[in-house]
Length: 87
Image (tube, rainbow, N blue to C red; front, side):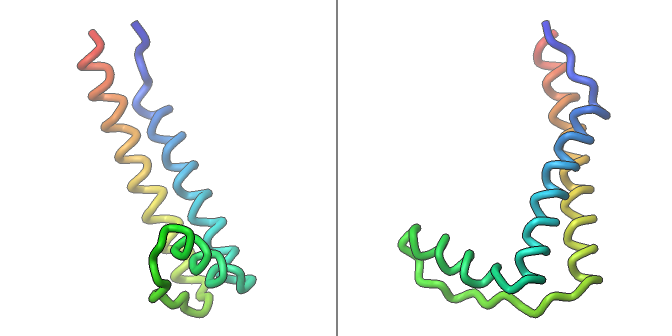
């Protein structure tokens, strides 16, 4: 049986989601986010209707912090549930 340490799983998911959103913030900052989101929606047969706003450092930090915190919570819950279900 594999036991998952909750803190380790939480950190992994927090880092993964935080980094993913850091990359998104960088794309917004350098002006590549709108063409990327337009392309992604287009290949899913969706007409692009979303407009990426101008970059704001405070908003970017909030985005990264919130998603990392959510990732931490989800990772922690996943590990707890895994450990309970795989006894």
